[in-house]
Every structure is written in C-alpha cells, then in structure tokens.
Length: 289
Image (cartoon, rainbow, N blue to C red; front, side):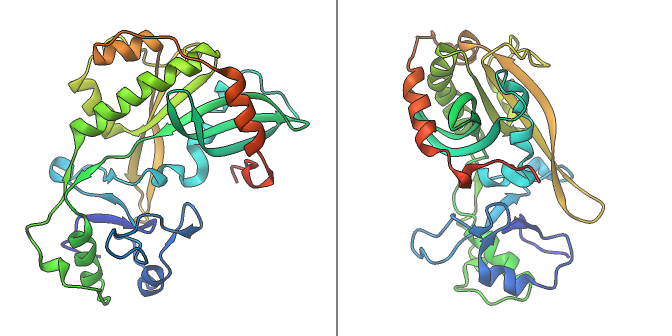
C-alpha cells in the first residue's frame, strides 16, 4: 500500500502488508503484542487509542523503521528468551515468570524474568525497555494513514502540517542512561543482572554521543549491565520482525563512565525478593510459544 503517512505500524500491523481488515483493526484498538486495548491514548480523548508502533523518519529513508512504542519489543517474547542465560541459578523443573513493573531502589523496572520453584524465588533478572521518544505529535500522521486507508477520522488533523513530530534522540538516550546508572547499582549490589533493550538505531546514536569505547562487545555474561539491541527488519511478506543485532555489557563504573559520573552503592536484595514473591502468579507464568 502507498501512503503519505510516516506511520509504518498501527496496532501491531505493518501498513505495507495488504490487509482487508483495517476498519476492524482501528475500531477494535487492540494491541497485538498485549492482546488487549492499546494503552497509548489521546490526552484529550482517553477513549481513543493512538496505536502507533513504529515510524519512518528523516534519514530513515531506505532503513528500518524507528520503534516509538516500548510494547513493540515484546513481540514473540523474544527479548525474554534472550535473557534466559542471565538466570545463572535457574534449574530444570523451575517455573519461569515474567513480572511487569517492579519497584526497586533506583526506580521501577519494566519486567523481571523470575525462576521459581515451589513458590520460592530462586533467581531473577531485570529487563528495561526503551523506545524512541518523540517531540511534537504523531496524531496528524496517524490520521493521514487512516485517510489513505479510506477510513473515517475523528477530525481533520491530517491537514495540519505544523504539528508534525520529531525524534528526540538526545533526550531519550541521556534519560535512559541516567536511569540505568541508578538501577544497575541495586542489581550489582545483589549480584543480579539488568538488561537494557533498545533498537539498534538508538544504540548507534548512544555510541556516537556518549563514551562507549569501554563497553564490552560482545557481552561478558559475568557483568551486571547488559544491552541488547534489536533490528526491526521488513520481511518479504511485508511484515516487520525483531532480531537481536548486538549484545553488549558493562558494570556500574562503566555506565557511570558513559555519563562522566561516579558510581555509588545501592541496596536491597530482600526487598526485591519480597516484591517478586507477592507478584508471581499463574498470570505471570512464562511461555515463549
């Protein structure tokens, strides 16, 4: 399909792939990765989900789209599978659980992958996801896509050329590195691993804008901080598929060095274990298939 909109995926569906069900998709507002309504709603119209997963932007011409929604990364649950090797105390027979939004000293962590036996936490690793933040509004682009698809719109925002969006590369990169600096101290203190999941294009920017020469590539499993970058590549059938592009690692001092900061110690192991024990349930049980 040919469209003037820069939206490349809507509600998890690639716009380049022929789909006769767009009217139903937009009406349902369902995120294909969460199997429920998309959580990205308009501030002025909370009942409307925006549904934008990835976009083409600027120098992106001819390159893979830029992921702007962190939920896009959980497709096929591959990012969780790629962190299983960090559960060094996991044993055959243990259950695996994925627990979202866990608070630790240093801030909230998007997901914990947890090894459990007989209801007891035997091991865990944290996973933090970062998409590209945007400046301005993607709504006009979203409405242009609906127009090109021949679908009704709630307004005429597709005609608004002023309120276009941009990619906030610098703020996104700096913000997530500062967050990692705070959180990795907790994980290092309790001898556990934390993985930052980003797109390869954001990692490229971070390597250019910050001090990354000391970061190990490929990763060393023994280090507490890991960075997994993923490429979003178009397949022959028009679909877009995530694939691991790079696996890097460092330690507390390494993340501090990226930002030119000094590292400080954090705590507490028992606090994390207690939170995870309360949160595991049949609903968090992990199955990659």
